[in-house]
Image (cartoon, rainbow, N blue to C red):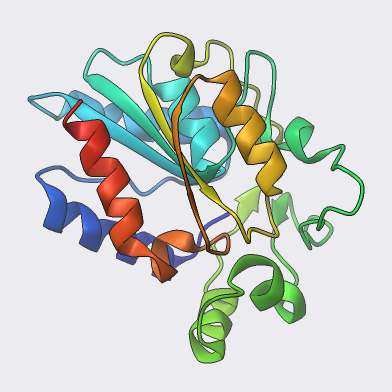
Length: 213
């Protein structure tokens, strides 16, 4: 799940790191998000590193077979295998693991409980910043949650994975298991699910490593 604030931070990092235009995913369905990414990839004139955070990992896994994609970077993200979705990957958490505070759907869309947002999603950010992010959540479509990957790009494209060791949305052991399955070059960083906001130098360094491979 993402907030407008997160998207703006991601755009700023992209502008500093190199040319390109990260797409604004509609987050209504996986199919729609993949289509948006592919449109952006079609407009690029050179190799692209696709970076996905959280549910964005599902999107890059499905969109990453595009010929422009040279590498994949997962930042505290889902890295599904064929037939898996974000929903299947969170359906059976390990004993004692934190459970994402996803509220019941409203008109086909999901949000995180605002009262639990900071603890679960942004535990290492200032309270005011976490509150803003909670208030600016983008709706996440149930169809996006349930969208299953058909041909995971990490099976044929090189990948990198950043494990956020203090993540309370995707348990770190699950992140490590997905990274190992994808044979990703992996780093671990002490940070919450919003590690790319709290620890941007480490995230940017991993993206540069993927770009220079």
